[in-house]
Length: 375
Image (cartoon, rainbow, N blue to C red):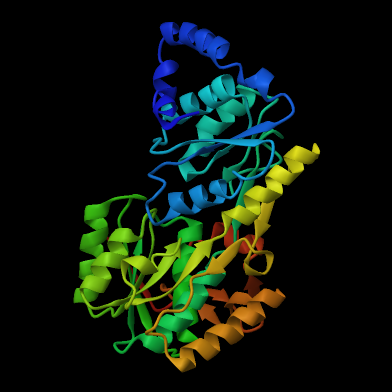
């Protein structure tokens, strides 16, 4: 399916006339019949595939499947978290014969993906996130995710060795549990180097707001932050703005080192190629697809960007030692004694939570030493 044809997916389903067009398209493109012994897998992205971030990481994972015999890949980028994504899913099923669809963005799940699950019970849908619940969601739905907080902890280790001001900066989209876990992990990694380090976080309110992301980065640097990281869809603006101001940066989602080769320290990356291949292998083998899939550094779901030229030898040693410990399994990012930034005890001296713990799925606090504000 060419890019030009994919651009008209949503338009084809807007009217009853489009419904007639679907019949013509099916006759002109008899994909189901031609691929009876194969499988078509669909990927949907909320932003561009080359955003140096969330969407690029998923697109790289999808690209790794293109050499697998019998597997066809269809993709659509820049699909908003609205009824548009339902139209995209429906066209992938009706036009391309997709039997497995990955709607990758957080807001695609409810009601959009769930509506398609009900309408197409023979199609499998897997959403990136932690929202699927076996007690209330259909079995042709599911979720997958990675324990990337460990990557942010490693970012923090390197940042802790690099900072001179002992002030770190974090540009964040929304205060949901995974974002809060990443912020906390980043600071705790830094505090494993120096307990006096603090972190200022600014929430932009949206996953992709370039102007606010630039403003937040500049504000953090103005307040003394000399190492900055983020959790937004595309870290490109944050990385380039911070580096342009002379600050060091830690990446997220994908490798942003080409954007700031001298200032990029390392980054927490997704390795979706590993995850998508697991699903496709099961699909080709005719096995039931798992509904709840999770993994971390030890499982290859998450990886780290190569260490940059500004990383000190001491930072490299602690980074390598901590990564080796994490890879063995059972590493605890959140462990006591630990208080929230409001003084509430969140972990006593004898408590430790590995990132797989259910307590972290609903994290609603920032640890002591994090100061948060809204852009």
